[in-house]
Length: 76
Length: 161
Length: 252
Image (cartoon, rainbow over all chains, first blue to last red):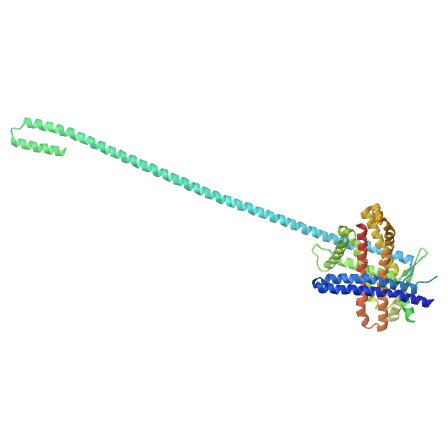
């Protein structure tokens, strides 16, 4: 049983892939935008950081699900 | 960490509400109040500055108008005075000329009259003298000597006249 | 104690002591105590920064005005002219979360038990489990804040659109969207709370591992800047940002 729980927790943490890809895309676009309009870099940085933090949420959900799988008291 | 705990949950909510009300009272209300008052003060003072600037501009304009009016007035008065002076001067001159003319004419008349009078007088006297001389000659013409003296006397008399 | 047991131990919040009021046992968790400390810091700062406010600001008054100006501008950019009703709440939540998330930079301060062994002061013996850890790593705190946020959203919707208008907004633009709109009001607090909780707990676990690996020597300070300070402030900002967006959507 414990083995299965650990495995499912590990699978849940795979959501990190999505967040990684998302933040990568956002950052590459941000770099493009800065190279196109260097004078707007301040605003672009702010938007990128906020966007990355929002995109991170999926990874965080996976992490929380893994935590719940590991630490929630099953059947007690 | 993951389990819900009623009392903890309630205490968190209570804490947050207390924090919210305290901060609203001691921080946000006061600071926002100060900031709004300042905004209002600045707006007011800017408005009043604008107003007094407009007022000053208006005042300046009215002063300038007044000065310009005064200048015009002064010009006008000077011109008027000058015109009047000129007129008076001309009038006086004309009067003087007229007077002089009159005096001249009068004098000339006088002279002419006097001359005429004199001539008339002289004529009268000459006639009288001639009459007198003639009578004298008639009275004493036997004496050449006395004749001669008589004529001399007559001439003297005539010369004296 | 092996690593897993240690980690699951530090992740839990513990009862530091319990009060007995009218025969009811009220456990006081370390989360609550840290919250009280954070509240004391926040209120202390507020009192310090607002002492003799003047029309012409100088020194510390500039700082607090900068903060309030920031919150006002940020609220105005999402809520427009309704902003003034929400500035105090957003300002409070932002300040509280920023300090509560970043308070873990003090987690180098040892726990009550260790302090007792170090200093021998009797007081610390009674609070062996106490250690300064961010209160937001406790899901109760984040869920409570998210629920308060969603209550604010609903309240704002009813206040600015009337109750009827608020109910009608569930059927717009097409009535078939109703279940999703209702679901929205459950998913939003869930995502708000889990995002905050997961970020802070994740950063906390990473920092614990770094402390263990480096034995508390210099290296944690560098990582602490990112995981505790930067991430904490960013998550506080995002929490308030998302709340304001939800409120804007509700009152529009």
